[in-house]
Structure formats: structure tokens, C-alpha cells
Amino acid sequence: MSSLVPRTNLPGLSPLGRTVWENVKTAVVAYLIVTRVIKAGRHLRARGLVRSVTDIYRWVLQESLLLALRFPSARKKVETELGKARLDIEAKLVPQGPGVTRHLSLPASGHDTTWILAEMAKMDQESGNHVDWRDGKVSGAVYHGGDDMSKVIMSAMERYCLSNPLHPDVFPAVRKMEAEVVAMVLKMYNNPNGAGTTTSGGTESIIMAVKTYREWARATKGITEPEIVIPISAHAAFDKGAAYLGIKVHTIPVDPETRQVDLKHVRRAINANTIMIVGSAINFPDGNQDDIVALGKLATKYKVGLHVDCCLGSFIMPFLEEAGFPVQPFDFRVEGVTSISCDTHKGNSVIMYRDAALRRFQYYVNPDWVGGVYGSPSIAGSRPGSLIAGTWAALQYMGHAGYLESCKSIVSAAKTIAKRITAEIPELRILGNPPASVVAFAAAHGNPLNVLEVGDAMSRKGWHLNAISNPAAVHIAVTRLTLPVVDSLIADLKDAVNEAKLAPSGSGTMVMLYGLGQSSPVGSTMVGHVAEAFLDTMYKA
Image 1 (tube, rainbow, N blue to C red):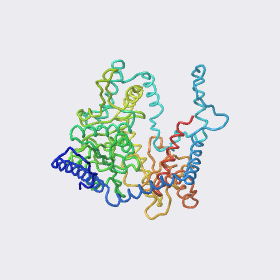
Image 2: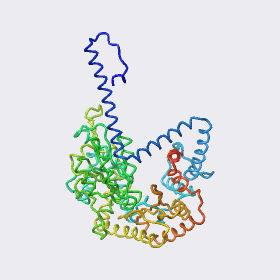
Image 3: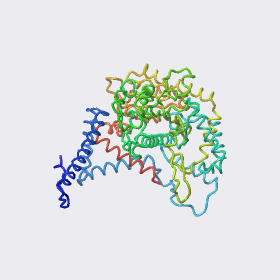
Image 4: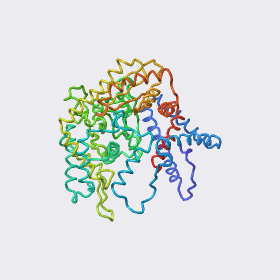
């Protein structure tokens, strides 16, 4: 073993000293080999032989692509294609033409309110792709509670538009409202004695949960190489948080029929470095709920955290049972559940913990900063108190009865859509058994229909639905705006299926982008470059 390490000439050492030195080097090499074997074994156990081989295959292809791009001819070809994609994205997102005014520097003198509102109205109309979300053809995106509710929210936000919760002594009312928002949501999820904070949205809530379990595991278990175990259907924010925080992620497949995470795979993936496992109620891609009770048993047995992502289920899931819909347990009544994320309002979310002791690991405190003792509950320092006030006002306006009625109408519409697709469109199938507001449809088993073509056909009819992968499918997140257009959705979907069968375009956004991403690891890499171009375009003035 010692031959693996170059010998070092140590003239001052006795024979015994040299022997000890060689043994130390051997022990170090042995330690490095053993630790890497253990890591490889854990990875293989978590992902399985087939997926591990697939991972290696994808990695080799991606590295080969990067190597190939070093050659001028290949690089030029890829840059040409990406350039076309970038121009196409800019044409859709960036207003063009002589009538477009670009505000690239401060005006010499300030404008009055009349000019500002007129200019905003002009910008609303500059793009030929402007979408009127009020027609109900948008999947999720806008969670509209009616004009009266909007007025209530805006009045609250106007009252506290200059407030900053970083200074609770200056804005005590905002501090009180924030604490009450957390308390109301905790009670709604059956943990009135628990703890939580507000955040800027579901993604921050999830990242805060990942950070909390990392700190908790380091402090209580001495884990320095943390890992998390998540369903492949879990929100991308978990991967995002892990990437930010240097945490390894094991993604676990879901059952192809139930769309619930495979519990045997979850069990195999848990090891001494696992800090948390994850379940969704409901997940974003297909709207299904994982078996939270079974995950809770695993979390309890292996003494790891269990985070339940209810960001999309938020104010639907807690009301399902009372509204008369079947629902499996998912909240703090389930043993093993230690945290839950719930979105309350656009720009506001709540991350909840079973107790305050766990919440403390979320905080950032710096007692030695020259600017004074600095403490922050979440990522943000200064925050807009207006959003907290708007959220508090929305909860007060809706009340229990309002959310119950909203749950009944939205879930009824979602179930109607699922039933009608099953009964009236044999070319399609519903993924799993979604309990709440999201319905995803894929091509029926054995049917050659390209469902992404169906999605593109729906886009041409004015619908803005979401494409998902593994398997290729399209989903709609039902909101109150969807309620009056359910019949139109089904009628347009029937026509879209016929168009996709008889005259597929092969050039729509879903087919080109999502189809490419699923075609191969190389295609996935190219989609990543297109996504980067999209993000660049977001900031082109």
C-alpha cells in the first residue's frame, strides 16, 4: 500500500521513525480509499446500478460535447444555432420597432403620475404577445381572488409601502402582522405551538429548510458532508438550495402509475450523511401527493428531518377534508413531519417548523460585525413590509369560510377536467390521482400521440399551459380564473389532439425545447444553454 505514495528521503529519521512515517502514509492512503469506496457505495445504493450507469453515460456524453466544442467548426455551429434561438427569444420577449421607447437612463426631470401611468399602459401594449390573464387561459401564474380582494390588498400595501420589518421598533404593526400570519398558517397546518417565519416565496422557504437541516445536522450529528433525499417530482428549489449550500442530492424515482415517490428507493438512499428527506403535497409537475405517513415513519426511524412542500397545495390542501374531498394525511399531525412550506400570497410564503428549537438553525446571527449585532431570520435583511401587510389583509378578507369555498370550487373544477379528459379524450391519460388543483395529462399508454404537439396546439389557441417531462406531459394548475372556462378548455383540447394527430407542426416551443431536452444528455445540455439565453434576455432593456 505504501508504494502508492512517493517515498520521501528523511535523513534525520531513525529506522523506527522511517517505519512509523511509512505506516502513517499507508494509513492516509487507506483512509482516502476507504472513504471514497464508502461514498461510491452509498451513491450506488441510493441510485441503483442502472441509474448509476446512466449517470456515468450522461456525464461522458456531456464531457464529450464540451470537448467537441473546443474545435472551431463545432463551436461555430453551436454558436450559430444558439444565436438563432437567442434572436427568437428576444423577438418574443423584447418589444421591437420604431414606436418602442427605451428608458435606459434617468430622465433629466421627473415625470408626473399621469405620464407614468400612461407610459405603463403603453408598455403593456407594446408586445404583440401580450397575454390577458383575465381570460382564464393561464395555468397558475396569477392567483386572483377578485377585484374587491385586490383593492383590499392594495390598500394595505399602500398604507405600509415604506415599512421595513428589519426595524420592528419603528414598524411595530408590521411585526405584529407578520407574527400573526405565521400563527394563522401554523394553526391551519395543525401545529399552533410550532414556529416559523415568513419568506419572499416558496423557493426561499425551501432553501431555508435545506439550510436549517444542514446546520441542525452539523450541530447535533457532526455531519460535514450533508445529503438530502428528494423525489424526482420535488420542486427544483430543493436542487437550487442544495447547489447554493454545497449539499449532495439523491433524486428518487416515482411510481409510474401513482406518481408517488418510491419508498424502497428512499430507504436505500438514506445513510449516515442524510440530513433530510422530502415529500410533496402536492408536487408541481403532475399535482400528486407523496405518501407522507410512510415518509414520516422513515424519518422517525432514521432520525432525519422530513420537509413537506405544500407551496402549491397551500390554501387548498388544509381544506380538502372539510370540503368533502378525499385526502391523505400530510400536515404536522403526521409523526415525523418536522417542517412544512406554504405559500400565502405572491411574494410571501411561510416556512413552518415543529418547534422553535429547530427554527433557530435557520437564523443568521453575527454578534461581531462592526455595524452592530446583526441577526436575520431568513435570506433577506431589509424586507418590504407592504407584502406582509397585503398578506395579512388577504387572510383577514378571505377567512376560513372564504378559503373553504375557494377550495370547493377550484378542486371541483380540477376533478371535472380530469374526469372529462378520461371520458372524452381516449388519446390522453391523467397522471396519477391528483387530489387538489393541478391536472397533468400525457399520451395514453401505447398511443403514439406527441403530447407536446398538443401543448403547442393549445398555445396557438391562446392557452398558456406547462410542459413537463419523465414522461412528456402537459399540466394545468387550476385557479379561480379557470372556473368559467372549463368547457372551453376541454373543447380546445379535443381540437388540439386532432391537430397534433393529423398535422403536427414539429416546430412549436414545447416540441422543440422540451422534446430536445428529453432526447439525450447532449440535448439536455443544449436546452441549458437556451435557458441561459432566456435569462440573459430577461434583462435586455
